[in-house]
Length: 338
Image 1: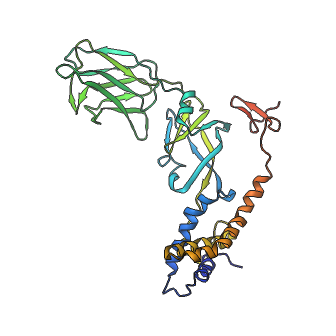
Image 2 (image 1 turned 45 degrees about the vertical axis):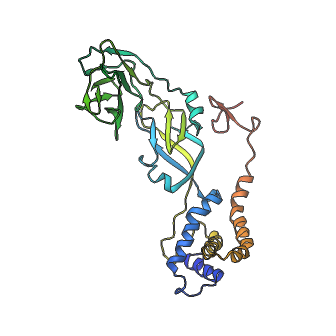
């Protein structure tokens, strides 16, 4: 028996008592099917068939990876639902967190704050090298106090350049980059003018000029934070490493091809009932919704059974059935022995 889009359409028409395309077109039915298939099904059911391995590669001296701007993660927000453990970096099991508090308690972001110069009430331009580098992007700032009469706080901060992990711009609090001010994250070289609203202004006489930044030692990362749709790695990588993790993916929408089938053909009846339920809801036919709910739930149980049976064969992990130990604790992936 066929389990294609044409079969699902026919089932939906029978369930909704809409045999004629003049009352409900195939295009409208497809929209209901796709709405249920793409948005409802993967949120209601975390099916094993929709779990896959997601992979991306790190870049040298880069710690933050926005999910929609990295090869391997493009379209992440729309195409993937959740990520989960285990996660590996260069084949090594790593620590994973979704809590900034938890992650940065382990990897503090306390700035190094050396005084690099002093104001004379006249000079606005400063250049040189900050010590203890390399430094983390988006962590660099230079601060002081402006000359009289106002005595405002002077702040110059770094603004990373997309695709450039070595150098960044230096801008004032309004985002103005004056005279090509820059910071080299690797060597520590800097050059900038203190400015307010893009206009150079000198620090007050005797006012300390302080650099604030987060130095680090690049090496193989061992921990990942997923927060704000970004992956943050610690330690910061010194080269390209392969990162792999489990992810739940959204199924591919039907494109109108009548012979196209669902990800698993056994889902076709569940999709038919799901689409019919949405049609009845839009018509405010609540009694009809109630009438199809028993079979809708039965179909839901049927397509969930494969995942439940697959997972039920796995014993809960304890220290007595795991086979290895590493710096992150007992685990079954490290390959060691008691």
